[in-house]
Image 1 (cartoon, rainbow, N blue to C red):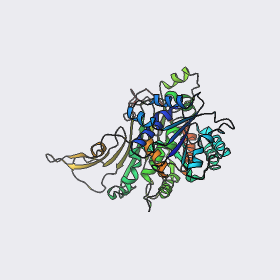
Image 2 (image 1 turned 30 degrees about the horizontal axis):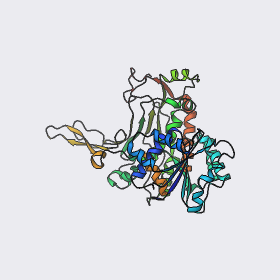
Image 3 (image 1 turned 45 degrees about the vertical axis):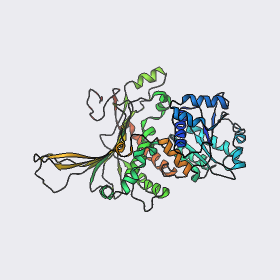
Image 4 (image 1 turned 120 degrees about the vertical axis):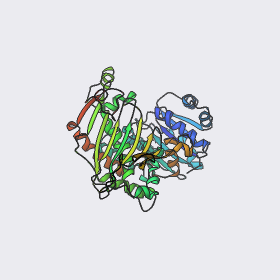
Length: 458
């Protein structure tokens, strides 16, 4: 589908995701020559716009002048509809009739609540908009993929009733982050890494995604959900599966997903005293201002898992994420064991470790021991892959990456339905265990690395 004319139909076309993420991604794809400037965007929403006022609205959200120039070239239409009502999409067929005549590739992007996905798919089918004689039709939607296993199963059933799995793309935007989609290449093409990533050499693995902001305008949603469902079920379990997965015999989408599934099926929760959930102090004030009940919803979690297969069984797998912490920060840290049965008689020998940055830098750092030439002490030396030094400082936007993969029909960077199901099984178990876990209230701006009483209240 690359470089062909496309028709993007955006449900939630006036929403935050469209303006903040999708529109800049479209501009980037045009700039890189991956999206034909004669492509069409159709925004669907309930605001009282026509084509001109919608385009003005979109252009008004764009701060970058270069992006504005590229988006201005696109054919932008608006379709006013309440897609929760039956028959609301009847007129959409007239807007896409050029696809039936000339042939085009069509992508439906559902930038809405998951609760509307089934109804939208049903309406599209009702008006013969799920298939076409010429070209490909794909449907795209984002997490949350339900709120538990039961609702996720219903969602999948509703989608598959009208779309084949090969045309369904589930976005977890973390899989589009440069560090994350590079994990497979880093792991599988470098024997120096892959041969040591197992329980014989690895002491523990820590995956951290800290955020400095609170829940902000997602308070009502978050109070019903919490950080475990919001972050563990999707982002962190997906990243963990990429770190732990075995190398497939072929580097293709289905084989990669099969290996991820082998990891997810074997994950179990470790009953550790260090498992912790918590809530930042000002959260209760935010609830009071909105007249919402305090449900003791967690905004922080640290959980230990185990992967009960031959390669990883017994290695602590620690996932940590939270809101209103000291800084926005993300990394994957692989801690290696000390050398066994070797008394070096040297001071300062430390465990090797590999640190893969997610945010703010996407660097890879390998920490190794070497001798200080001026003493008998051992120094911990960092061998650094500097991303900016090698490829320049420009960040590759995850939505640009993911939209390009959808256009190409490559599903490697998207979650498969069975992966979502396994993740929900684990998270549903974790939800039932929360009442027995340590609960902390922590001050806004706390640093979980230190855990000191003056910053992270116990």
